[in-house]
Image (cartoon, rainbow, N blue to C red; front, side, top):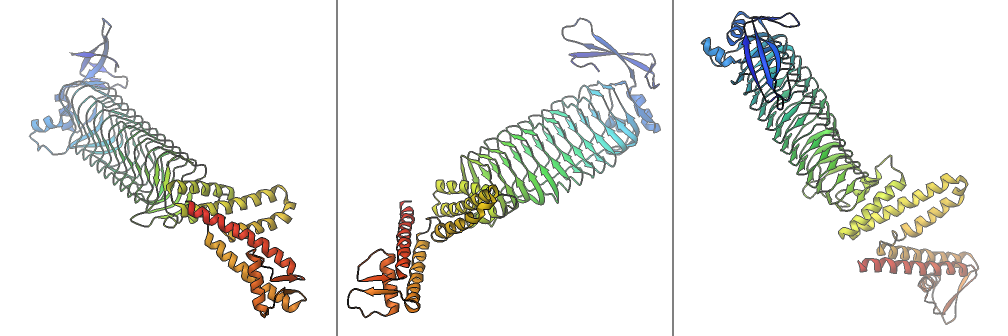
Length: 580
């Protein structure tokens, strides 16, 4: 074939034509390809078989070898009319091949309701120049069905209800013209299906209710035009499914209620245009669903109510545009958005996702994780390295935030501390101050643990004082008042300290020569004196009506300092609550 021609003309010569393989045609087609900017046309010779000879070969049950042939008309509809057959009666064709052939007539190319048998059906490298192409309700019982590198014209391409019973089916390197391509209700029973590097150009592409068999299915590097791409209700089985580097146009991309089986689904590096991308209510029994490094320019990206309960889904390094991204009520085993750019609203209110990875994401808008209408089952969530410019809506209790972070088995305390710090700032910006306090406490706890591990790792001998210092800080700052986030906790600590010191004084008065001396006439018992002295010491009142003697002096000094510290601690915690 001659690419780039503006028109061509055909002259049939009554001269035999013999192909390189030895196939003989009764006539020769002299084809002149007229090129823009050139005076002389390019001439190519091909075999020629007329409509009558083709139909006679079908009658005799002969193999139709039309390789290197010019065909101006082929219509099984006309064949049935000429043979007085019903319009849907099956026509048996054995061994059809039309490699490197040119279909140049104006009429529709009609292969409908045909039964193709033999080793192969091949239109490899064929060039169809005009008209619609119809294979509706045909059946292929061939080991290979090949449209490899075929050029289809503008018009309607109809593969509706076609059945491929076995063998490989390939549309690799095909180029379709403008117009609808319809594979609705087509069935691929077994063998691989290849649309690799296929160019669909403009027009809607319809794979609604298409059934793909056990073999691999590949649309790798395919290019869809501006029309709608519809796989609604399609069924895939156990083979690998690849849309790697596929370019989708600006039309709607519809994968609703698709059954993906148990294979591996690959949308890595695929590019989507301005239209909506919808995967709602899809199902997949097991396997992996990968969307790594994909580009989704704009519009809605919907993964709602997807049933992937045992499937790991990865959108690692995918770029999402400004449109909404929704995983509402999905069932996933795991979801990775690692290194993604999330510039629009992201709905992550999922029914189930055992592992949610938001590490290293850049969030510029809103992530919604707060399950308002149902309970979300998210076991573990990773947020390390997140750049949170927008907001994350989640509830500390409903989302079990502490469990989400603490179950990160592989994360260090330093990494967990960083994630709690991110959540602390997020809750502060949302005005959720109680949740902010909870996140801050967990941040300080993991930070303290990380500092301890770092110090003892660098200098193992420092463990002799690092651990006591850690336990001291743990008791004083954490247990006593939750890092100044709980004035009630500080009050309880003050009460417990007061009671303990009171009993300690009583013990010293009974079992030692220590004493609490009264400077006035005093009839208080040992118990009353112990509690009274503890109170005026803890609260740093110092009336002077009682003073310590012996070992009680040292204990009183300690209690006085502790009381002063805890009262200051309470003031800080209380004022912090009030000012917010």
